[in-house]
Image (tube, rainbow, N blue to C red; front, side):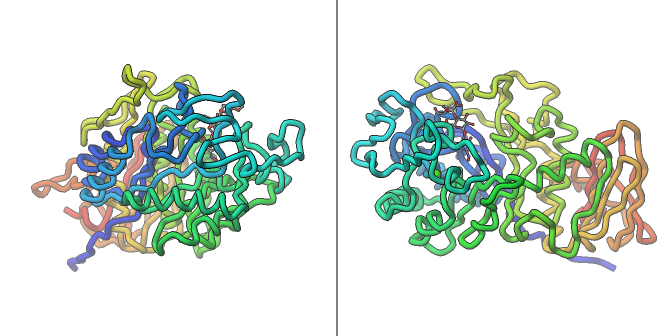
Amino acid sequence: ESVEVEPAPPDVGIQLFQLPWTAIADECETTLGPNGFAWVLTSPPNEHIVRDEWWASYQPVSHAIDSRLGSREEFADMVERCDGAGVAVIADAVVNHMTGQDTPGTGWAGSAYEHYEYPGLYTDADFHHCGLTADDDIQDYTSREQVQTCELVNLADLDTASPSVQATITAYLEDLLALGVAGFRIDAAKHMAADDVAAIVAPLPAGTRIMSEVIRGGGEPITPEEYVGFGEVFEFTYARDLTPPLQNGVFNDPELDGDRPLHVPSDSALVFVDNHDTERGEARVTYRDAAMYIIANALMLADDYGTPVVYSGYAFSDRDAGAPTDSDGRVTPVSCALETDVPADDYDDGARTCVQTWPAVAGMLEFRAFAGDAPRLEGVDAGDAYGFEREGRGVVAVNVGSETQRIEIPTSLPSGKYCDVVSGGRDAVVDDGCRGETYTVSDGTVRIDLAPQTAVAIHIGGRL
Ligand code: LM2
Ligand code: CA
């Protein structure tokens, strides 16, 4: 009768958007490590133009690791402290382009630059001048040549096919590896030929994680599949597919025997509910609606497809607004407190959402640790509710409607009383009780009465 299942730390990442290195180091020790995150994705560490908007980070003026988010020393210290807490660091690598500024200037760390001149680093000959559009900007996303050799919103487009440009970019990535990072998000990867990215990362040590951002676009010739040969890719289809059921309560099981149309294979896929671009764009479910956000994250973290990346940023009403800064212009370090930063009803602009501390999120990481590689079984639909089992390991159920909904899910979990990790968080079993709700499995079924807009998740490690 007794079932012993050892939890295995899941490969789950978290993007801490525009958070300074000193604050990420604190987060690794106080929240990310304890809650079981395997890695953290930082914002770009490169020297950038001096502007208040968050997107200054995406306009490099040199490959110096010195930015509004912290110095090189602070970056190195963060990696060391995160490693000590069991959290690897993935750096956002902006290497498709340099700035989009037409007028010369001086960067955050003092480097002089012009649009196509970066002294000691790149000169005009190192850039594409595509000559395909009036201003050399990308206009037609159905043209591979435009997307990869013209300029993305005027950003000076590096000639990434050039061996010397490739070598310079590789040296930048090697510099970050020397500071201990485990890998990279390759920003705007779609705007570089897959062969160029492959050549840039080929010299890096085996095991370096390469996470290409290739936004899948209908009718576009460049696909994420082109980039899986040398690493993982962010699969934008996942969040897009997740949204309609959350809005209309009509859940359709994904192809449970492996193939999901318009998805890269599970091992190559990084999945997310939203990121810093989509929360300012296409995402319909964000921190602004905490109940639905928790449901979306619970479904993602319970799923057997892909490597989930949780997102944690700051509240904003102006899409360009940067994170709050100190008087010296550096982004203000803010720490989230474990178990106290539950989602707020309403955030002031600039307030950190601290999603890494939400008990429901921490509880779902624990669920995933127990779910391991158990397959996702066929789901059950009941009104606006839906749920599924990870075979023999756990059951998740959600109700996206405005009425309480009963759902009965067949399960091979052993009979008994289980502690819900969404309401209870991680380590919810205490002194033979549960910090959250409890649900009973009997005769191969669990019956759950789901309050409006809630999720419930029970797992094999949470039997009372
Ligand atoms: C990305 N991935 O492919 C980033 O995730 C995304 O956040 C970046 O856009 C983009 N690609 C380039 O790295 C952001 C932001 C843009 C911003 C750019 C450059 O979403 O709004 O563009 O960074 O900082 C801004 C202005 C734009 C202007 C451009 C150049 O919004 O109007 O274009 O700077 O000065 C003339
Ligand atoms: Ca390009």
